[in-house]
Length: 179
Image (cartoon, rainbow, N blue to C red; front, side):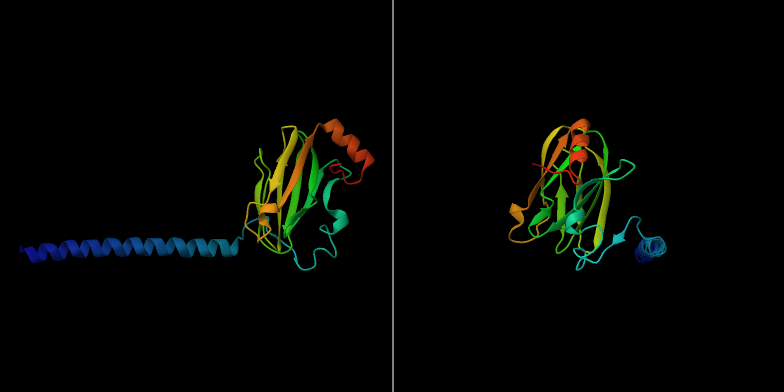
């Protein structure tokens, strides 16, 4: 056996191995593409960002904290350059709270310091998540996604109060907020 034939055999093996790896990776890409096309990600809810102020759950009088007839707490939050609406949320300690949030103009980020709340708000989509805030006190809520020249001033507050205090606020105000 000559050196040339040995080298040719090794080159052929490497070529076959590299071709097999490339075919395998392409098969993964095709499978994933077809799988996600037939099963889109769950909980994707779209909304018309240009008209959300006019009707539906993100109109001005629907924003903030609300308690339904079954006692479920929902927060409707709207991010706009350069403010969160409402600017302050009052939430009960230790109770699950459903957040429904969106943006009307640019990509924004919601982060409630000291908690595990951290999400992106993209125009045209509603972000929905449930959180339970365990620590009493006030938390800052900055926008953590650069949204323009006023980004640094885009802050809101989240005040966590005892459940009894929250219940009293709900009895006296339709939409409890910071005073």
